[in-house]
Length: 363
Image (tube, rainbow, N blue to C red; front, side):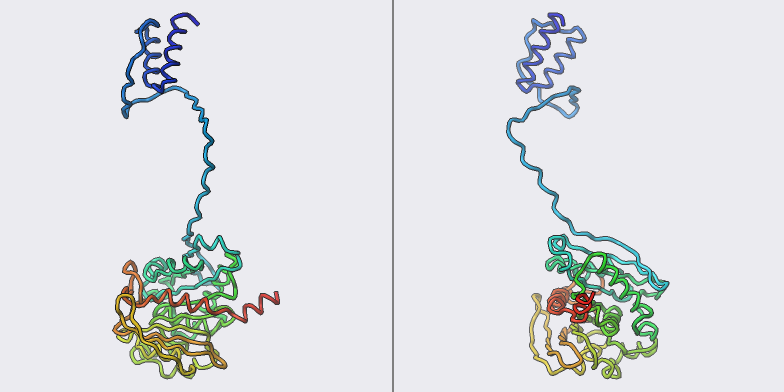
């Protein structure tokens, strides 16, 4: 290396030690072009770096302070889509697995099957009910099947057709098999599996609770109808208009623990249907209250009796055909009402399936 180049390298090294990388680079570039000499004093002031500056040099930085350990990535909620086929029927679904669930023992996670109403979809129903937000607080997994238009033009669950009201066939068989599939996939707690729904979804939830009592430990019905309320479209429309007195006898035996919400101003599904779901229950304790936004409700708590589980019946005063306490981000919601999602989860998590427990012990 000649004297000129050695001098340049010393000057450039000094600039680099002073943190003046731009000036060092420029000095080397000018020298290579023959525009400077080693006797020229290096620049005395560093020029502020601007956006167009590019330093094409390999700079090795030695940090004498120990670097902190990198933070582990925080667990995130999982919100995924899927599809499931059983007995020739296919259903799409969305699945919510809260991050908090991963911190629990795998077998300890409850699961809630949520059934939307007519014209709704899985994402819309999740947004409107805010069930994912509530489930996150308790570590629950939430499963949202979505009815296909090919099965019903308005995306209603076919709760009113006889082929969809019995165990082992139709939509009940499909939804139960989907539930079993997700329970196995997520290793959820088989004794804490629940089902809830709105309107046609609420009616189908009651069907599932009666047809698969070993699978669903409790049922939530919002603005829905009781199992056996109808057998075709005409009887369904009649039950929706006037209530379901004929179905009361069908719901008094073998009823699972059930929580019911229904607006007394519901113009779509008569409030008598909510009463029919809990008809035949033991006399209950009645209380009055207000939601945080001032919406009135009457709550009746019925104790369990032989052949049927305990029940809660919430009459939402002045409320229409909408999910109480929901979000305006979804359809068919009453944001100022009592929080139905929170109350349903409270009710659900107080129940375990003794049949599922017995099956797990036997397996």
